[in-house]
Image 1 (cartoon, rainbow, N blue to C red):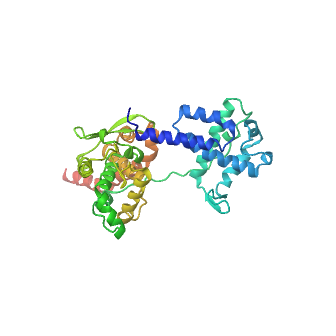
Image 2 (cartoon, one colour):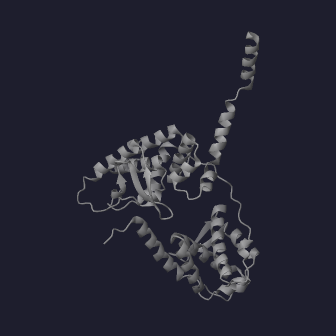
Image 3 (tube, rainbow, N blue to C red):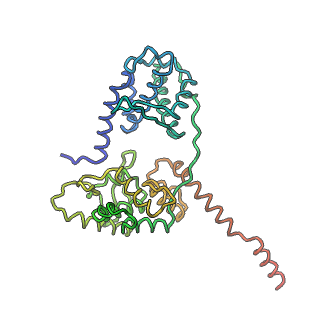
Length: 365
């Protein structure tokens, strides 16, 4: 029997959650989710399911045409009663709303969304309408003309060289951790150093990192096989500093010969470490070493991309190294660095000094 990969486990878990969510949604959406599963990874329709449940809940509570409806009796044709202005009001409602706590229905929980959160939910509604309109299940597509929240480009947050050193020193020494944290640090420092060094040294996604199995490592080429976001396998190469951190961790890991877990990075329970655990360990060390910046695993990825772009100036190489399918994604993220390089180059132009040198040449002649 073939060994199941981490990516297969994630995919299957997403499908199971999606099927559970479908039971809570209008039955006519089943065909939409079949369509989504045929062209996207399961996590995309799963995200749609949460957003669409919220959209239909809003319609049931606020739209006159849905007052006599329930979640299970809504049909595709009912969406013909929804105008673009109704969708605009839904997006505005997302700014602040309350919902009953699922575990304690008597308690209300307040939710908020920034413009990024609003846009994601609007995108889910647009995807549904686009599908229904294409299949002639609705007469119009009001979601296409609904106003989208304005998204402001965020600057690329990255660590400078001294900050990277401070961060890795914190991982290695456990300096400034609490007494309780230091007790755990003694057990995990080689693992944590291997993870953070690998993320900083390759720019791989945290999901790619936790999905690595021991057999994916190749120290003859200093490379590791990962499964990218779209499902394609790729070889990522790393330097000697990363290799040393990985080898030190593996030497410690091999002290447990009865271990049959194929995953490279393990939790203290001996199971594959999860994405959330890596996010928390990066946050823990960053809070003591890079206090003025909010550092996440994605910021380690940005740091790698920034350094590679500054060293090479090759946006296509950065895109390939980061696993971006579209180089425009890379260009958007690293445009600010190019501006910085232009500014730095402009500062090296000294007009008065050049004029003085020119006068000196004329005098000598």
